[in-house]
Image (tube, rainbow, N blue to C red; front, side, top):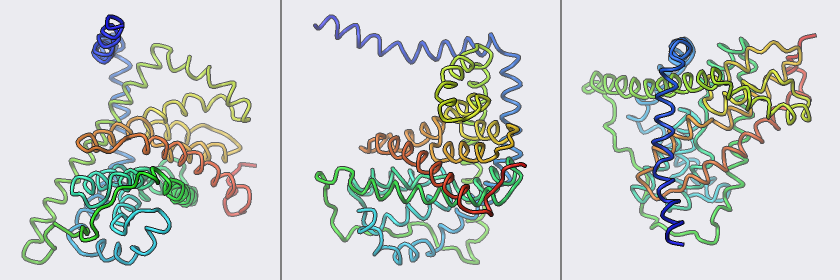
Length: 350
């Protein structure tokens, strides 16, 4: 028994190094296609993500140096406990998660846990539904830049938020019987310097610097996963996975042309959405529903960002994973309902 356990332990030790060695080898073997993929990832990041998100990151950073979000959170305090089973301070994570996008909600939940503002169970509930795509990414990048239609962006934003609230209501029962308690005198307060004429220049400079770091991190993940997707395409692994999905897609009456984009979106959200949005299809509602599903899911790239954020806390990644799976399903469901019941959202090409 001990010998078998030793072999299993040794196997776990060599899995990740083996994957990294294989990845490095593939970078050399498929260097031509990888170079092109990396360039395309940079172009996608520079043309779609930076223009729509960077100014918003700066504005959000500046907003954190005011008391606006603090007082707004106080107004919403009375709704958080009965609806989401989270103390009022959690409204700050919800508001900023909606406004700023990935991975701000997870960062705030992790900070709440580090500062003992919320219990472990409350922070895990926050983790399940406050880490969302931001409105500028959904409307600007996906709606306007990819679909070329701002109305589609607003539709995706509406269903994304509805699904997020639905997941939050469901996860109010997460570890309901194990709820630990935090003293009520632990309240959220703004630790940043309030902006004024005397420190305006310094705060703007720091906000830009912080925003550059965030946008570079996102760009790094986009480029890395662009290369991973390229390797999977060159090695035919992506085609094999796509073929395995065809039967499921056929049962759902979804054209098999969406398989590659769907798998790419599971790996990295922006690349997958870019593929899905550009597939020519008369029944455009299919493109929109799959895009809605992927927006709710977030993808492995964002999962790794969240995982790294909570790594230094005792929070489990399980509620995030389960929450994102539910979020994706509800997003697609709500999108389907709106597309089929409101004339304004009829985008099918006749």
